[in-house]
Image (cartoon, rainbow, N blue to C red; front, side):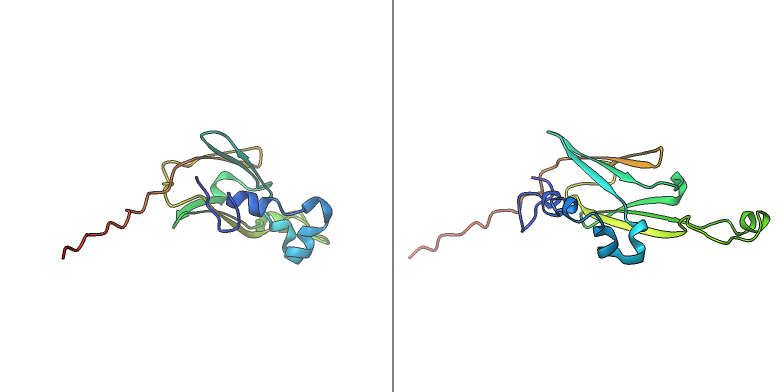
Length: 148
């Protein structure tokens, strides 16, 4: 099965079952002032794969990068505020829009390749489709009988 975990049947189950509803301000407690940088993610399992919806509001497609290494799919996004536009609009007395970078990784299994992952970005949501693939079987250890 894809996404094996030593803690349970599925890595997504272990991490996603965290009781968020019991702690409405959990992001602030876990991430402090960087809570706004956390990529909110929904994971849906289907018979043939997984679909992920990752919220990236305010980002453009060219500010988002996906990479796959050692079975980990990493989503990163970075943006800055345009200084020239800021100066033309006058002195800023309060700035709440996010500028910086954010990154999150998910274990998808060593059998998944870059070609397997399908990505689409629309309306501030990165939609990923990841197929289920069985991990490569480790060859069985075969013993040789010793005569005599």
